[in-house]
Length: 126
Length: 194
Image (cartoon, rainbow over all chains, first blue to last red; front, top):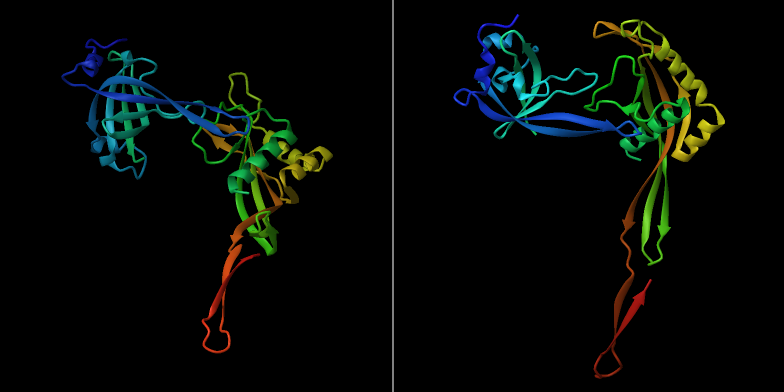
C-alpha cells in the first residue's frame, strides 16, 4: 500500500536536490575472455548528504565514513535509478558529483513512499 | 612473453581444448560481471614464474654492421586454472550441488595430451611439463552451491631478451710522419670502416 505522502517529490525539487551524473557500466567479453567496460551516462537529480554515524552501521567494515555520500534518488529518474552491482550480471553504477567520483556500495529501494532509492556510494580516486 | 601474453595463450588453449564458448575462459581479477549462476566459466591466473638455469647468450649481426646481444631464457611458469559452476539448475533456477567443475578440470588434464592440444601448445610456445592434482573447491556462494575446481599447469616458456651492442661502424685515424731533418711533419687521415 502506498504512503499518504509522496516523499519522492523532494528528490527532484531543485530546492533540495542537485544534479549529478550516473555512469552505468556495460561491456562485453571478447572471445579471449577479456572484458571491455563502457559507461552509459545519464544526468539525474537527487538529494546528496554526507553519511552519518547511523549509516556507518549499514556499511561494510572498514569503510571510511567521510568518503561516503548518501544519495536520495526518485524512481522517476528512470532505468532502476541507481543500482549496486549484483556480482553476476552487472557492475555497480558510478556517480559523478562535480569533480568527485563515487561507486555505489548499497542501494535500498523505498517503494512504499512514492518510489525512491536511498543509495550509499563510496568515493574513489582515479 | 609478458604475463598478459602468457595468460592469453593459456586462455586460448583451455578454450580450444575444452570446446568452451567464446568469452567463457577469462583472466582473473578483472572488474566484470561473472554471469548467471548456471553459466559455466573458467579463469586463468599466472601464479609463479621461475628462471631455469642460465640463459643462452647469443649475438645477431645486423645487415648495417651493428650487433644485437640476445639472451634466450627458459622459464617455468605455473598457470592456475579455475572452473566455476555447472549448467544444471533445479526447477526454480537455483544451481544444484554438482561436481561438474571437478570433472571439467579432470578432463582438461586428459585433453591436454591429445595431438591437437600438443600442436596448439607448440604453436603458442608453451611446453607442458606437469599437471597438479585437481582440487574440489565447491562452496556456498550467494546462498547456493557453486561448483568450483582448480588445477595448476606448469609450462616451459622461452623468452628472448635483446639489446643493441655498442659498435664502432666507422672511425678516423690520423697518422703524423716526421721526415728526417727539419722538414715539416706530414699528417694523413684515414677513414676506417669495420
